[in-house]
Image (cartoon, rainbow, N blue to C red):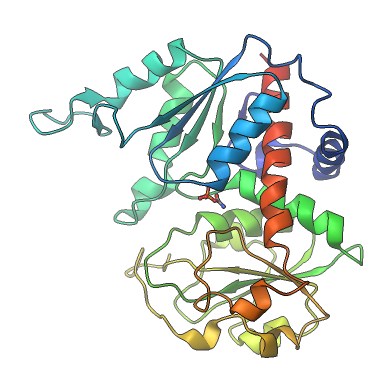
Amino acid sequence: MKRFTSVHDIGDLKQAVAEALEIKRDRFQYTGLGRNRTLLMIFFNSSLRTRLSTEKAALNLGMNVMVLDVNQGAWKLETERGVVMDGDKAEHLLEAIPVMGCYCDVIGVRSFARLSDKAVDYEERILEQFIRHSGRPVFSMEAATRHPLQSFADLITIEEHKRVARPKVVLTWAPHPNALPQAVPNSFAEWMNAADYDLVITHPVGYELDPRFVGNARVEYDQRKAFAGADFIYAKNWSAYADPHYGEVLSRDRAWTVDREKMALTNDAFFMHCLPVRRNMIVTDEVIESPRSLVIPEAANREIAAQVVLKRLLEAL
Ligand code: CP
């Protein structure tokens, strides 16, 4: 594998999950693979899980790890070409990227959507520049439109817990005070479609996702109807995708919060969320603390997903 930015890079999903479960049984079995290899993780945005799980995965493989928080201690970076750099940005990404490439063997990048210009976000300008100019294999640690490491961990978690071959998986919008990108729901839908699960997406009118990610999923505007018979409930907030409201918060309606009464409509479903989560906005304390909540095993599987990806990138060096 030369890069990892979406489900399209991982190949056969059954094989990827089998590889993940094999690594999970003994995560130190490939510890020589990363010897004298360096991972550079670059964060344009904050992280808890991605940072720790990816670093742990690299250490399990015997890699050296360097982390750069672009907004803390590095020169402020200009990202647009043609700009007269007479402001506060001291360095251009077009020099910074190949320089970063000089010091490592593999690069992970986290760069969220800015939500001000849909075309810029959906072109994945930052991630694509790293792929083009770093000279190194690049993987996404959540970009503007996708979060494939999260979705891979979600898939592993569902495969570990499903009780039927083709579970009903419901992606539900839930309220949040701030405008959040569509990366997690886009990516989740893309991976669930690729896994051929029975995927239903439910959200208020105005929160329709890019049809390229919705794919074969059914869209149900009545959240209670969507929950009926579900095996997995995956909650997430996102801002509007459709024009003219791209990146806007159209609703903070707490009638969409996932609670015990709605979970009772399901087929004793598991509750999932990528974290961090706003309690009693997205989900009630009672549901997230219930025995059906998978949020911690899901986060734990981030290490395994990252280790499969890093292993495959190292094998292709
Ligand atoms: N789920 C996830 O990516 O968490 P972090 O933002 O903390 O990395």
